[in-house]
Image 1 (cartoon, rainbow, N blue to C red):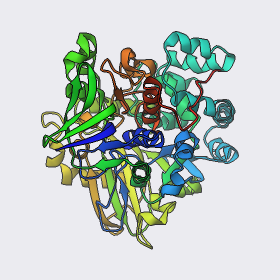
Image 2: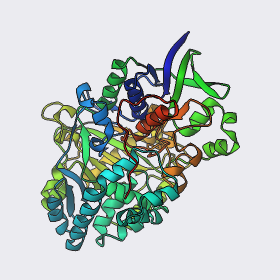
Image 3: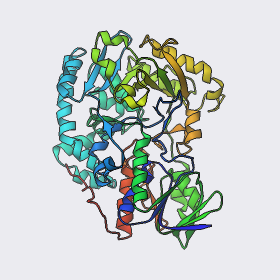
Image 4: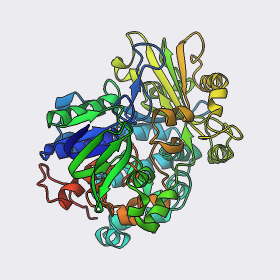
Length: 528
């Protein structure tokens, strides 16, 4: 059986759907192919504890998405998607009972930080003016354009603010944080925060500091669950005449005369694409599906050597009678209803110890971020109840046991995670917990094979895989050596997280390459 479309998109994650929605808007009949039973990829919401309790399995924090062109261009509010922006955005809790919170209102943030360190509170406000008020729209524009070669970046970012922005590219993550803040507790928040994006203290990762800081008070929760984002995108595709297919595993990209012509599914179904194929799966898999010979020795070698994140996340999901109550609320009452809360580390040394243990394949000292979505959207749990979650850092493979070792220790580790959380929240106990589920790194790859080694940002953030280098300079413009084959997944600029930028940038590349009229106004490459 053969079906025919103008364009075929491999993978049903949010980036493929964003690209598909834009191409449908441009009048193209598209097919989105997802190998799992459900569309959405990392935008997954499941009832893994009890019926009626919704848990976002991967994407939960929608960072600056309201600033992207996607919401406006695709009118996603008309297709059932909305977000809420909690007032208390970020928080950090320490074993001595102290805590602080970062609010949407910068003055409230300053008051909270002053309890910790008055000088750092002043610094935070100065950085807020510089990055949030001064750079947010520029940084957003940078994300929704093709990455620029280093020399062109320097030319465009040649003003005082631009040069300061680029100077972070010479810093590690720790250097970027430590040059601004003197109090170890405030440093810990930012280092844990960056670690949650799979970053570690490696050269050039300091460039993420202004990007993250500009958005640190602009986190949103998707109403009704993260899956509602991709459901809305799917509706746009269908309304535009496209189709989505589940249980549709692609085993081969059909190439004739160095031109992508469609795909062949695992069941041998052929789907033809008259105009383009866009791959939303990871870069190494894309090369294998199309055939290494078409990419040449350099790119094929680069695909084989593509690096995955050196740490993963392991999440404890809880169905609760009452929301978590933190001991630190005596010091900072606002921590109780903060959206994204970090706990488990008091010092940089403890963070380093955690990652050293992870690299050795050991279950580390537990630290990471969590909270309770039902505080901000009651549809996440039945009336009078709450959900809770905590995402500590973890290794993908356990020493001498591999990733399957997580199954061996599931019950033991579930109780360990709960006990460690309980040191900060005394009501995280058997009296309050109605049901529990540990979502391990092994579970991640079983549910979403695109997240190789549980690399949930689909590739490590290291110098050779950032910006113009992602996934390789010769294909960082979302095009490939194969005509009509494009890249729209998170292995491309700007990487993982729910931004839709790789899908958006790919749609622009397709329309430019094939001379298709855009039905939207593209973001202009910024200058500073």
